[in-house]
View 1: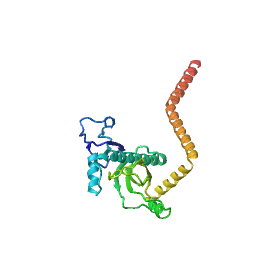
View 2: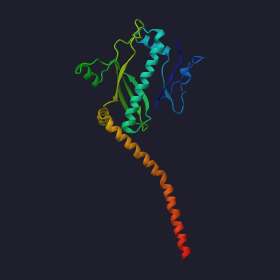
View 3: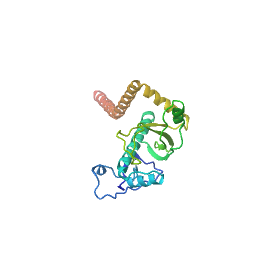
View 4: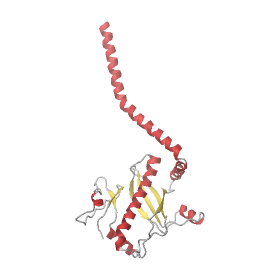
Amino acid sequence: MSTRRIVSTIPRGETLTPAPVHQAQTTPTQQETNVPTPDPNDPAWVYPSEQQFYNAMKRKGYQPDAQSMHTVVSIHNAVNERTWSLVQKWEATLHDCPNPRLVRFLGRPDDRSPRALFNEYVLMKSPPFDRHDWVVDRGDGVERRYVIDFYDGNPQTGGFTGSQKSKKPVSMHLDVRPALDDPMAAVDRVRMGFREMLPGIFGELDELQKNNKSLGRKMTMLQPKAAASAAASDKAYADCTKTRS
């Protein structure tokens, strides 16, 4: 199994020390050669290697298949990238923050969120197989927590035990939303809910707002030129007046 660790696209919060990237393979694969190296001034989270993932599963009591680790780790990394893209969507859409940072995360597979409990016992849906809490920073030093429930979209997906491989592709549903730690988080949920129900209306409003911002930037750029032109015109008028007099 590989000990190569892949650098994610998830920026690490400034409060944590960046982890090293181990390159045990002397001949990297095509995928690995395209992976960016971490910048000390802008570090990113680094995913565990296949060997680390295998060892962690053994410690937790699973019986992982060593030959499946490449697939398992690839799925793990892809799910985390998808999760982060959904967090970015909340931050960019509602708070105009396209570049938040992940400060820390916590796995809570045994803790059901209120929404998960409602879905399971009221709506009679399957419970999530995992839960994470991700804490992000928008750059203002204030930490904001997101709750992520992971639902298995295909109960026949296998791979961890290696006893029986599923013929169906892996699918899962990610329920990502801000934790209700303050009133603004509840407001954000309502705002995003309306956006999802009325995508056409809010899409037009977003486009209009984007055009207004673009127009505002252009006007700001033109103001110095307009002021210089007005000053030149005033000077020319003054010179003309002096000549006539």
